[in-house]
Image (cartoon, rainbow, N blue to C red):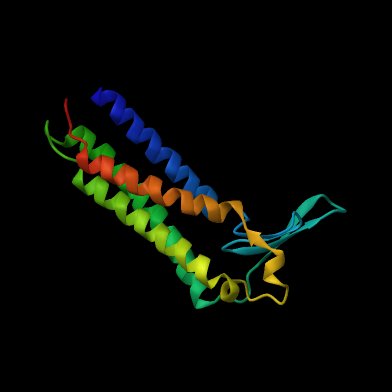
Amino acid sequence: MMALLLLFVIVLHLVTLAMLFIAIMEKSWWAWGEIETSDLWHNCMFDNATQTWLCSSRTEETDWLQAVQALMILGVVFSSISFLVFLGQLFTMSKGGLFYLTGLCQIVAGMSVFAAALIYTFQHQDILQDTRELTLGKFGFCFIMAWACVPLLMLSGVLYVHLRKRA
């Protein structure tokens, strides 16, 4: 039973880490239809003639955007550190030990992503700084994926805190 829980926690951690990477790297935090998107790093437009995305780096970075970028990167860093610490503890910790440090790092990662998603939620008008009508756009799938990572990171952090090394 404990081996199954251990496998579940590892898979949950890796899936959440992959979701975080996708949320940071993909180009859909805000979308105006199917042809124009904005993410944390670029503004992109779909070119029908070449059937490719044309992306330009953001020239105007607000303090809010920099905060979201930093917090998302911090979330990935803490989640990655958490996984490496877990692997280290798995092979060096004595039997019966608890994975407190791993769980704490994962919870801090969850709080970082929560703060980033919350800032983007309430400050997206300032972050986008666009003359287009924002009511014509909507939050993209990367934004939703970032919000989905928050409870998953917290859950895995709590599971790590309660997980005991058996062998």
